[in-house]
Length: 412
Image (cartoon, one colour):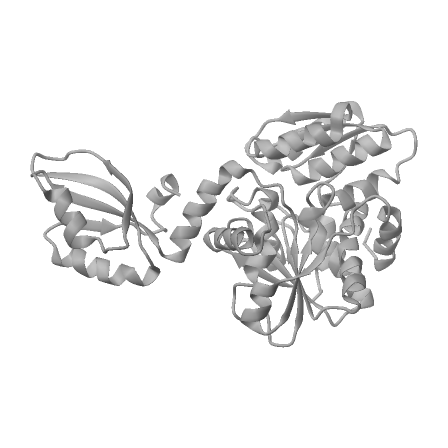
């Protein structure tokens, strides 16, 4: 069963008095840099701080009175949408969450669902939670509410596109959409293909979980061998059959965003724009950092899809952003085991604006030398070549660690 624009329009009417009509805000930072008219669709300001409520409520509102027990799997945002809908519609849900779901999202699920929701945490990935949810549904006869792979869910998510056009007063030239399982981009594409086919749709995936790109390359949904869970709201091993069918054959562009670049954008959104976006929520704005996406004079809308960010993760976000910007570097330094060795490193190698942020001995291989892991934060990215020159001219032996080095996963 496909998804037609008419289903999105019907969902729009069904959701009119339930979901927030989230703001469409001009993105001054990127508009000024590119010469385009860039807007942010603030789904992070939705009732449950993400667009996921739209699909969950659209499906559940159409149930007959006999089906009261619901089950779902979620990395957090879909669960909040289901929790809100179950409380509003007097349904009961068991919600399966992977262990990677941030505490902030778990607390929000309990708050939104109250006694209508039971959260069950287990497994390391969304896919493990999904398997547990399916097993529960088979055992009890409860209805599964998919996070993305259902026509009613897709239609509900697609209502974002109609809101954008109504708020702008016209169709944008480009809509930039985050992609996990594909429900949001499928719904938006289905509606725009019918009503505004000239609008380009660009999907943005995390580089470590590009399951839609893999599906397009294979000609069908396929499972990724590995998934990077950092972008927890979009870390999906395999896109849905329905979402893939909607997008197959349509001129949808796909892009990947490196986690370091994503973290840079999360910090800029927070520091400059006052937007608190979770990693998946910042995918679309992060894609705008590429110089070729926004052309002068074009109207571009990027969807900030979620704002359920756990503040405890900001230390990791900051670290990844600093590495990505080229101001944070790590070295394995062989210090001579003699007085003054560290002082010479500080005086002769580091620049006036450089700072040591990590220093720990790894092990002593002999009495003459002691290797240490040293983290250095530079005053600016362009300070790295002079530092490397001073290091090369010194008697100290050091190896700069590359972000591609396996040891980096223990640092960042």
